[in-house]
Length: 354
Image 1: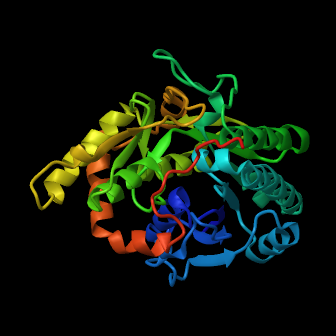
Image 2: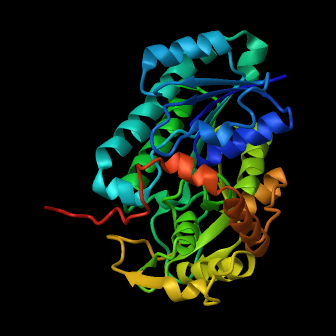
Image 3: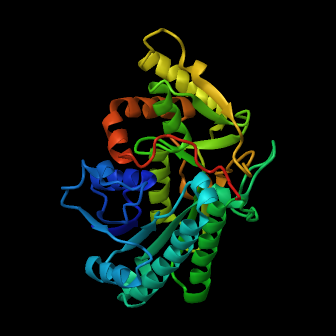
């Protein structure tokens, strides 16, 4: 059975990936996560005692520690998800994003290269380093057009700039040292285990508490929404069948305005957890000042991964959102546990320049 080292496996996408790998007995997994605010072992309770699962709380910027972990675990593949990932937080505190997303990726590449160079021929040929990135590196779209693998980079926030930088590092390590890398850029993920500061869980939790549901500007910004389970299957398809050095864009084929997302969630909450006074959760919608530099639209053309690797998303927005809302309603204890007073659904990312 193959061994996969996953960085950031206690985060949103990472925990869903680990659940999938362990639940389907597809690999022995070492999860390396520092457990910062968005990473929590509560997301992995159901697999923490599995024989195929191992956890190490460690910082990917710690070169010595990463070297020891590679030597001890001897991975066949690396799936690098660890990153600071919230645009609003990057506006208020960009330093953590630069340190983790750029320097952390450098350390992972350097340690991976030295480990890979020492592997015997067969294992060296099969080794892969998969770097998971975002469509935000491409900047903003107007009403027409879609991001493609050859779209020029044009990051607009400290977060997207740090991810663009890490993408370039990964490509450089392939061209300079021959490290067998793959890169994926995904659209907005949603689903179980998402830290409750992102749009969809914020809407759900604020609504359930009777708090105002904040919507930036007029809610006209458009995103392509990708159900996280679909993203996981795409990542594994790229890992197994992708061509070394290639980039694959992963999208959900589900463009939605933010305000439409909010109304959809309110309608599902009205259906599954109606308010005691019989009124709609939509009455709680409150428009707030837009985020600084808020990109208008993201949309992904996922033709390459479909044609070359045979992957397509299984969930449309209706089915994925139904699963998501029901999961949060059934797992409110998880929300309370991961928040543990560190975040109270307040707005962040105000861009205060004082």
